[in-house]
Amino acid sequence: MLESTPITVAHGDGIGPEIMDATLRILEAAHARLNIEPIEIGEAVYQRGVSAGIEPAAWDSLRRTKVFLKAPITTPQGGGFKSLNVTVRKSLGLYANVRPCASFHPFVETKHPHMDVVIVRENEEDLYAGVEYRYSDQETYALKLISRPGTEKIVRYAFEFARHNNRQRVSCFTKDNIMKLTDGLFHKVFDEVAAEYPDIEHSHMIVDIGAARLADTPDRFDVIVMPNLYGDILSDVAAQLIGSVGLCGSSNIGEHGAMFEAIHGSAPDIAAMDLANPSGLLLGAVMMLVHIGQGDVAELVHNAWLVTIEDGVHTPDIFHPGVSKQKVGTREFTEAVMRRLGQTPQQLKTVRYRSHGMSPHVKEVRLAHSSVKETVGVDLFVVWPTGTPDELAALSKKAETDQLALQLITNRGVKVWPDGQPETFCTDLYRLRFLRKSDSLKLSHRDILTLMDRAIEHKLDFAKTEHLINFDGAPGFTMAQGQ
Image (cartoon, rainbow, N blue to C red):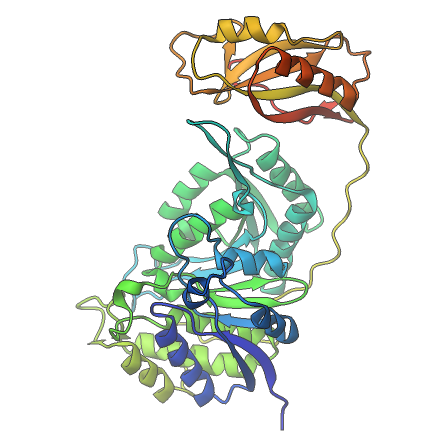
């Protein structure tokens, strides 16, 4: 008798309990070899005063099983609560989010009958680091974090996934024409890694035109790898293009574990109404079965689901008169899939899985060489609610030291001094850029502290500082717009 695999299961919030019950019933009917450890996360835990939405016992289960099947959860609105999805992904190092989006034409209404795209999304960095600040009455900030090792892991995963699953092309979307350092690094690493996979085609697009082409002609894409935010948005777009976000499952893969889920939220407005489509979570569970080496069960479940879709047995979110044959609720759809276990589709492509087919091994990432670092200046972010940029410049120049001189002042990234444009709209937070007076000067932290002391003496209300550093002689900071 084959040994059961321990997995952690969370029934979630909203429609979560319904679609998890449906999924587990189908898995049980297909004789999946699972030893289930249930945990409670989400809304009920938040309400007990646990701001993370997850308690220590749940973490213990996740570390023990290393496999998590999770229904959607609800994050309370308002401050003080972090997204539990993001917390689990980042805390467990689940760096790769994988979302297959393939059309089921002609059985599910879609404008793109040949679409078959896999979105590979970086899961731990970018704006989803959640590092945000408020520095003044009028401005807030978020830090966009892109690291070389984090980028190399996700890009290499995308190419390994393509090779492992007989995919021919990997495309990369960034906005490096604007965010030249962060998205620029992602693009640079993509090109470096792509050179190691000559058997796979590769291309890069600016994310706005890439998104437009994905929406218009998705069949030109195969695998798309993106930073976190773009990947989150466009994987939902891709899912809707095939007919419904309720049709897509998602895997979150890391070196020490994996989480599987539907891509949609908890939809509390239809909870307990027998309306929810369990397909997304069920297909996430199929990905889990492949990951844990139960490809035989994954084939059984996935093919039964395809036959159900072919037979026109559809939940309300994908029901279309003239295409669908029977509108059913969650429970009846579940029973329809169970009755079709052992059958294979006639028109849709029959699924064949091999063990671990969805979780390719990623080699250890390279460490970047140690750069020669040289501090060349500092940006002071100053709250200046009244007065003109020229007046701020006159005051700021009094803070100059023997080593550092005021070069420019910006507001929201746009140069407003010297020679700013009178039409530029300004908020109450300005950036003062001080650079060393000579390239031969070697600045120290003490030199920057001296500047800050002088700024305090002249009543400059600075809320934040950023050191300006050259790496191997190249600036590790960007110019201002209009500079």
